[in-house]
Amino acid sequence: MYLGLDEPVRECQYNQICTRNSLPMETLGHKKKKIPRRKWQVFPGRNRFYCNGRVMMARQTGVFYLTLVLIMVTSGLFFAFDCPFLASNLTPAIPVIGGVLFFFVLGMLFRASFSDPGVLPRATPDEAADLERQIGAANGPSGPGYRPPPRTREVVINGQTVKLKYCFTCKIFRPPRASHCSLCDNCVERFDHHCPWVGNCVGKRNYRFFYLFILSLSFLTVFIFAFVITHVILRSNRTGFLSALKDSPASVLEVLVCFFSVWSIVGLSGFHTYLISSNQTTNEDIKGSWSNKRAKDNYNPYSYGNILTNCCAALCGPLPPSLIDRRGFIQSDTPQPVSHSNGSSMYASTQLHTHMAAATPLLHSNSVMIGGGGPPFPGKSSLVVPCASLAPSQPSLPSMPGLSCAGDMLTLRDPDTHCHHHHFASPEETPSPSGPMPLTLPCAAHMTHGGHIHPAQLYDPASQDSLHEDSVRGLVKLSSV
Amino acid sequence: MSLEEWTHSLQDMRQQAAIAAKVFIQRDYTNGTVCQFQTKFPSELETRIDKQQFEETVRTLNNLYAEAEKLGGSSYLEGCLACLTAYTIFLCMETHYEKVLKKIAKFIQEQNDKIYAPRGLLLTDPIERGLRVVEVTIFEDRSLGR
Image 1: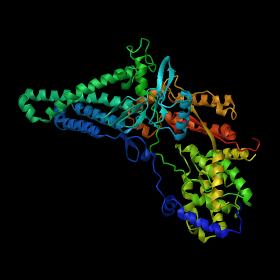
Image 2 (image 1 turned 90 degrees about the vertical axis):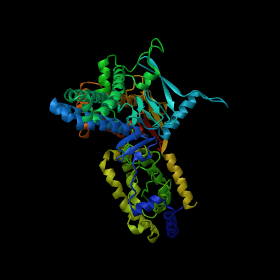
Image 3 (image 1 turned 45 degrees about the vertical axis):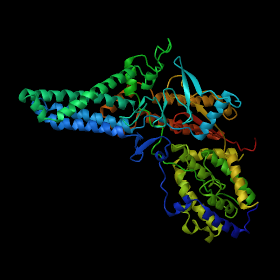
Image 4 (image 1 turned 45 degrees about the horizontal axis):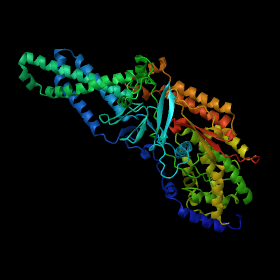
């Protein structure tokens, strides 16, 4: 196919058609910068996010608010009605200690409720396909009506055989101790349980906060219970029991709340202390995974052997980072309108090819480099391609988009990373006459404009990382051999 | 051939020139839930890279992750200090794990630039895949010799 200089009018007409058919992204980009979305907005699990992705909770948060109200109301009543008496008659240390405990409880509650429990991100399509292939190969060909066995993998951990189950929702083999929470619809690492009181799952990342919350809450409950009783007793000694109750009616409410809480909270703390010391999760304990009753030689392969190490590991061990990048921006796949080299059309096509081959290795598979593929700049890329033969520009240019994309790719934590600079480069940076309405300019001129603008845009990220430049050059050498 | 057809054929060429295959190095759970990757050399990479080189990369990666999750005096100290300050200290400083993750990112970038990119391969930082796999992208070799 020959793209000759004798067909400028036709090409410009084509450009016109393309820009009309261009996707909204382009027109938006021309009018105003489209706000890139953050990953939490497209998170597949059933979670709620607040504060622009900083806070992550389960969908049902009603009980969490109940917890909050109970704690605040009871503590509030304590500080308002009981503390003045106790501070003046006993010691002012009581409200101080109470205050410290109260804030610690709230802090731990918020930390447990608002942080990512250790959600495992779902598999990318490539990973899922690869796993499916492996599972299919392992199972062998299945005839009609044959139901494939459940997907499990066995692994030996410290001498114990552990079965890893395949999660159909997340399309991954769950790591040991991970479990899929049906309420949140996520696989959570070291899944303990889903706590409605906290409004979140309790997993690897927030287990220590949960434990410290229930521990400090049990201290607070016992503290309030004890001192409210003390207060009532001291008052009754002076004025009699019934009048004491009449003088501080709040105390009755507090005692009731605390009495019922003590049993449950202290009991729960005790239970979790046991779990921590034996390095088990609630899930494992309930299922009896490591119990001797299951098999004689059944033991917990994750335990460190002694109670102290288990406790330290659970409470003071390193805090793993969140695997779901909630506040990262989604880089939508956009083709890179590459302004590129040379003279003749034939050479252009092969050169284009090699340059693409050179540049694409550093782009993610989903990214579309050039060649009219994909949204949202089909017009743009077609625009660029035919004009290549008309207006030669520097040969080094084609490598730059790949370069900057690579730089972005390796720094941004997103499987679908793409240079969102390029997103806006063409429509915004090309001078307005040659923006969405290129028909007013001959293509060559447009190309030159593009040639000027693109490097300016593309060089910015590129200049940040010259290492990638070298690697791209390496690839160029490889492909142009 | 019309312009559209030429563009489409170019697109096909581009797709062929891009990714040939992806290999996933899975996690190795034999030591428990610590982040370790299997050092088994995948057969798809046989033609591209030296087995020793690859295993060395994965081993170094494993060591780095082990360092991140190590239980020792310094991690306990950090944990206790954090607890005492009600975890507000992490507003100012990075956790030890995060520091090592940065080291890992740098290591992978370095490996890619020095060893993998010249061979038409690309390692993806496992943190981008939720620490599940090390994704190795194999690019089609367009050199004329083949």
